[in-house]
Amino acid sequence: MPRESKKARIARAQEVYDLLLEEYPDAHCELEFDDPFQLAVSTILSAQTTDKRVNMVTPELFRRYPDAKSLASSIQNNVENIIRSTGFFRNKAKNIIGFAQGVKAEHQGEVPSTMAELSALPGVGRKTANVILGNAFGIDEGVVVDTHVKRLSTLLKFTQEKTPERIERDLISIFPNEYWTMLSHLLIWHGRRVCDARKPRCGACAVSHLCPSSRS
Image (cartoon, rainbow, N blue to C red; front, side, top):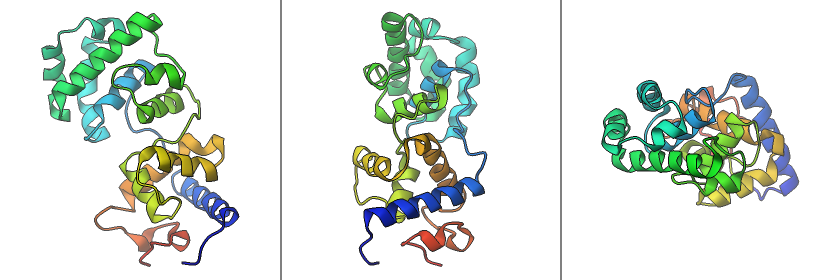
């Protein structure tokens, strides 16, 4: 593929976004939550597992611990038993309890709505903070870079970077601010439904003609 100018990449990115939005107009975060606290806890639990699996354990978790105050004072072994099927349950239990304790102690039990405050809490990195800000507060602070976003951004030649932070920087440079939260949803939905890592269905892909990696 000939070297693409920044202007041409931005134009192609816009077309990819428009086509994926047409394909998935209802794209959204597939973690089930009622408030910022539930989304934060669910996002921490989603590491190395599926949203579907997290959604199977959180109803009981939130029934027992409906807010930061109750989770902050929980017994870790009890939390571990509820979330065991999500994998890495000991570390995850420690993280969500630590997160709840931080929210209770530093933010009067209310999940904060800034990147700096969220990132300072246990279990919360930039990716998790972006999920919370974009989906619970409607703040487009950045792009959530999960495995699907990383893979599709690379296939689409929107980035050549390897780390989530640098991939996010590249995506931010070619997509408008107001697209950032939805962009991650669109790439995740497309990655789960069409652009499968093992067997991408390029023939059924709405953006294959815009993808330098297409096998069509």
